[in-house]
Image 1: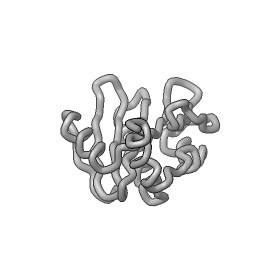
Image 2 (image 1 turned 90 degrees about the horizontal axis):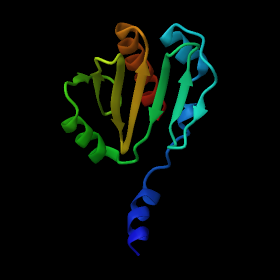
Image 3 (image 1 turned 45 degrees about the vertical axis):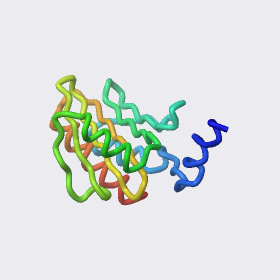
Image 4 (image 1 turned 90 degrees about the vertical axis):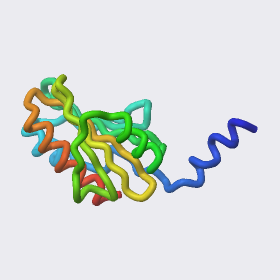
Length: 137
């Protein structure tokens, strides 16, 4: 019974889109300024686009909706608010060289993680690709 109570709320929610279909390889390549391999589905349900080196884009859907987005925002620091992306969005730029944008639209919470050797490219790519994703939800 406990398992049914846990699964039932997820089943009633909006169907999650195929994350690999939210962006084209060309869009990711243009944003990262690199040749990008076709996307690969992850066991977590996410999707990853890899470049020829270490550059990549990963999109994940934690499945926790607006409450998960709000919780992530409280637990992530420092963040920068982003406007014009879904209903709400914020970015986290790591000293390790990646940028993660967390966005929510309706009850869909997604994270967009860009790893590049150039922080400015990562920030611009994460933001521009997050806009495209949010507009397609």
